[in-house]
Length: 187
Image (tube, rainbow, N blue to C red; front, side, top):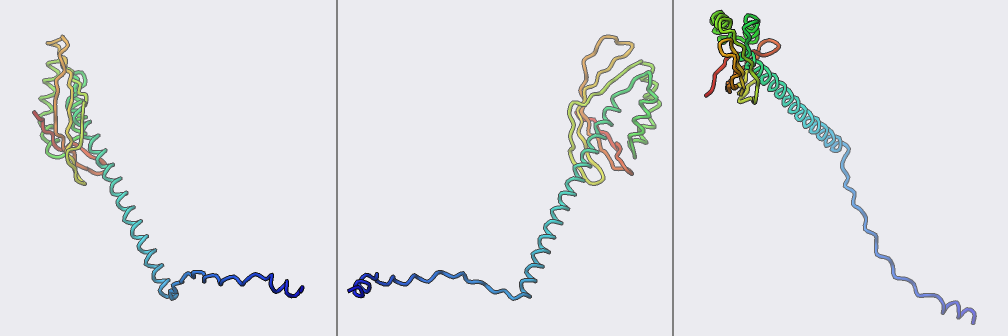
């Protein structure tokens, strides 16, 4: 009986488990793997180089824009800030920040301007109220400048209200900087 109990007490065999899904490995020959790796590295290198070039170009353009804007604003202030007590130095400052035809034309008129300012004993001070780059190339920019100009003179000691001027200042790259090459007064 003991044998019967052992035989009868065995549990029925369990059903076979389903086969486990096997991952299929794609076999890539070593030569192809190397070619794919080289192509990926070259592609990533080209992408990084292109992105780096774009960032560098944008940085240079922003630096140029900033230079042109500052020179345009300073040129407008120079033109509107003249004191009879230092008229020669003020005119020289304008000439030093100018180039080309504008410089030549202003130099031709500078003596008369100095005399008029001295005779009237006038002082004018320009203050930039707004400015922006209208257009720009690698070599020059057009800068729009709005100014408030306060003027006093010996013949009119009362405080005059400020005058508001607008200018389009063309700034041209020269050597290691930039200078004013044209000024147009806007209505």
